[in-house]
Length: 63
Image (cartoon, rainbow, N blue to C red; front, side, top):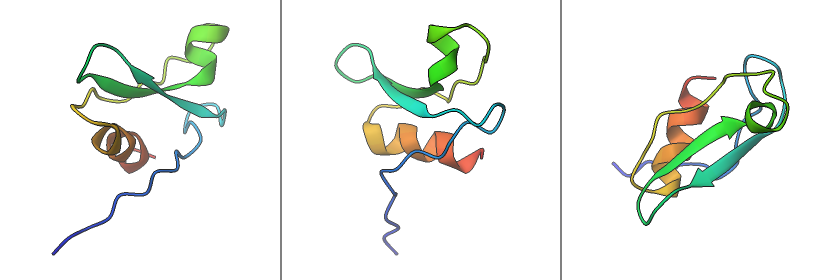
């Protein structure tokens, strides 16, 4: 059974702000709240993954 992973990020479950996909290096991705880096007011960050779809799935599944 092949499950498709949506490529839309759900809003942050802590503050409701928009989320953003972060890439570091060649195979390290995660999703974090846009208020995490910008204002430092929210500490929501998703688990690291080897690809974009997995990082998005990690973020959306905890929402």
